[in-house]
Image 1 (cartoon, rainbow, N blue to C red):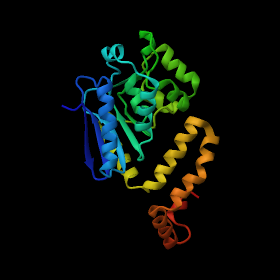
Image 2: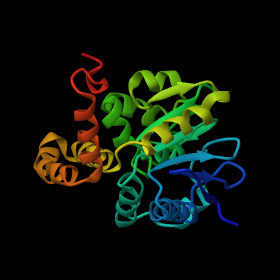
Image 3: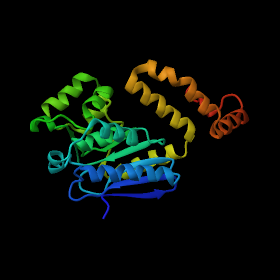
Image 4: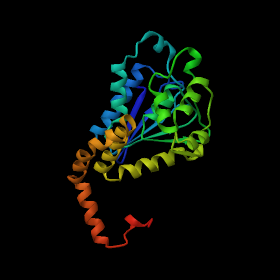
Amino acid sequence: MSSVTLEKDGAVGIVTLAKPPHNLIDHALLDQLVSAYADAVQRGCRSILLRSSMRHFCAGADLDSIASQHWDQKALTALWSALEDVPVPTVAAVHGAVLGGGLELALMCDMVIAADTASFGMAEASLGLLPLLGGVQRVALRAGPARAKEMAMLGRRHDPRTLERWGVINLVTAEAELANAALSWSRQLAAGPTVALRCIKTVANLAARGGIQAADARQEEVNETMWKSADQARGLRAFVATGPGSAVFEGN
């Protein structure tokens, strides 16, 4: 039986971690997750929602797997590319324990929505390890190196409100509302201009990895993709049809 399932809700691909008891990460789970993302794109999904059907989102890595299987840089680079650069927006809906590799899987999504009862942490240092899936650098990107060192070196649990305040996650909601909130965000993204959102994601990821110069160097190429898209043509036609003072500028 697969530890990862995919179902479609309209244009949203709902990817569910379902490995009893706590979605502990091993190579098989990661391979299935990568395949589910690729399958969602192949089936025409315009956004992906990552969630868990277990009591916890993910309580970390399977230590037997960590001890017996080598996680080399080539495999990690392929994993990051497959999960972070999937060409549609991704939303993680997390609850319960979001620990170690579980936090790292969430951080590979474009947006993270957490239940107010969730608990976050990176405890690998207590085992003589560091977060193996890139958690330190991804927290450093969002909250700065001091917070990343604090989380990874001390290994303490953190509540979602703290991580929302630090900028590590996007939104905290009541646990009873988590599914609805995450699906609402995913549907809104799926209904958006697919090409433009993909371009935004590309530029943001480039800036995150290589700084503003790396993003600027690809800006013209990304712009060309956007200008050639049918979404852009429809959007401009709709804007012109509404005339001055349209909702596009409602904040002004």
